[in-house]
Image 1 (cartoon, one colour):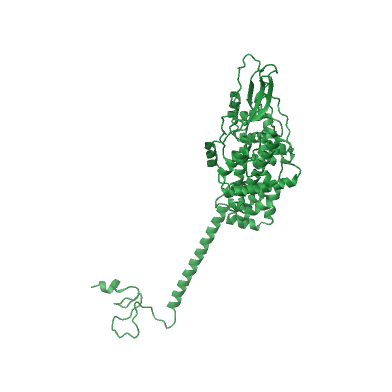
Image 2: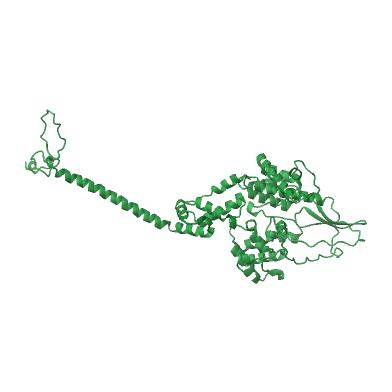
Length: 504
């Protein structure tokens, strides 16, 4: 149960584990995710009679009740794991890609429009929503979230002749689960897709219409302040655009606004070039798919005026967004991205585990590579060794087969060196002190040896103070030794200390 390999691929938990970089935060691990999902959460008594199943759930109410339960019980460490399933719930692209199927509970029926308490709503004169795009968080929180699904609106009888009723369908919004629950109860939900139903005269109207919601200047400025420059974090910018696409369903013109607001002309040129290359690649894979046109047709430079109510145009717009995301991912040259990784070096007193996490984050952020994937172990280990602190680098260089061993084992070896640094420093200090003491002893021995040899050298007289040159004709004081009295000529004192002078 606790083994990652035992989790089925086509389950919510299996999908999260296979796309860990997309759903995981900075402080959660796969081991704990499996433990909570398959061991702990199935034991909780959730509200509304919900029960958490093994290998996860895509039922909105089940996920919501689990998060509310964790908040009530103050299980704060589990909430970030619960929200991974909520992020998966709103990421329909991943669900379709991995063919996840989990039956959801049936939706409740709303009260009939013929109820006596029903208010008489007239047809609105404008369908344009006034709700602006919600503010987004940081780049790590830009995965789209949505409000809870609402039950479909009932359609009145054909002969009712009542007015057309416009219902808003669910959409994405960057709010907490509690805020979304409050919005659902209050009947508020910002969206771009509108469900129409009801009768108007002798006609019955039903289905969905799309309403365009413009970006406000304040929202654009707020997002730009929170986002780092594209060249500093290309993957973060790509995730940001992906969340905007999922939340606001932007048109071609809206996407041009985003590209011009967040990117420089040079960056836009690189991204569009990569987007066309991706379109050409997808066209080669499916040449008979009319949506996957060649690059110049799939990535037009002028507004193609795609109609969101036309399925054909809608698919082409979706293909255009997909190519733009690919261009954002690959727009920065690989060498520049790798240089960002090479700039991550271990600090002098940094724990090897923290150093490893910084390298992992750099690979995910700048190169979009999963550093934990088996095929990338050799590359990540080489980076870890080459950019480690000098003492750790020397130790890892001496380990045979260090590049091919598991990264965790490599970090354990580095941590042993890090932990024993104080002992090594103490030994080095003692060694230097011994060397200095030995050097000082050698100097003293040399000085004493010179003095001893000078005192016993044959024919050598006593050393004198201020000797007179041999060729000097001056008559001055007689020559005396260094310890000889100039008055009494005795050794052991000088003239000012002479006892003979003190007698008088």
